[in-house]
Amino acid sequence: MQERIRAFVLSTLAEMNYDTDGVTGDTDLGPAGLDLESLALAELSVQVEDEFGIKFDLDELETTALMTLDQFTADVARRVAAGAATAGSAA
Image (tube, rainbow, N blue to C red; front, side):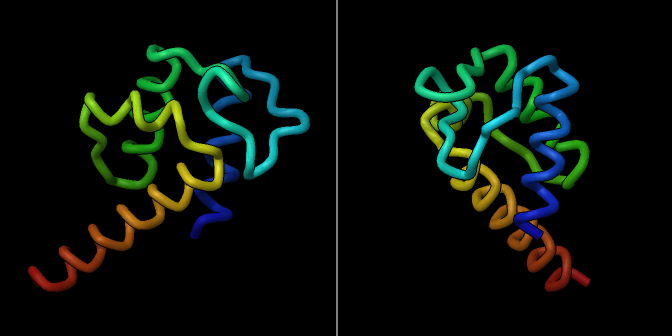
């Protein structure tokens, strides 16, 4: 799942005109790496929410900027799994 999320994030960033050449799992999303600003982080979060059926709180964007690509995709995978577990227990 994490690889699928990673591919989606990189594809989305490329569509947002960010250079993803040379991006690794250790690349920071914020100023030390991809340099995504708050608007770009919000856009990425909305795209990920729509694709994977999860939700981010607005106050999480600051934390997201400090994450590496691998940390972000792991967080998304955890949220997807938690949502699936919740949906499964509700059924």
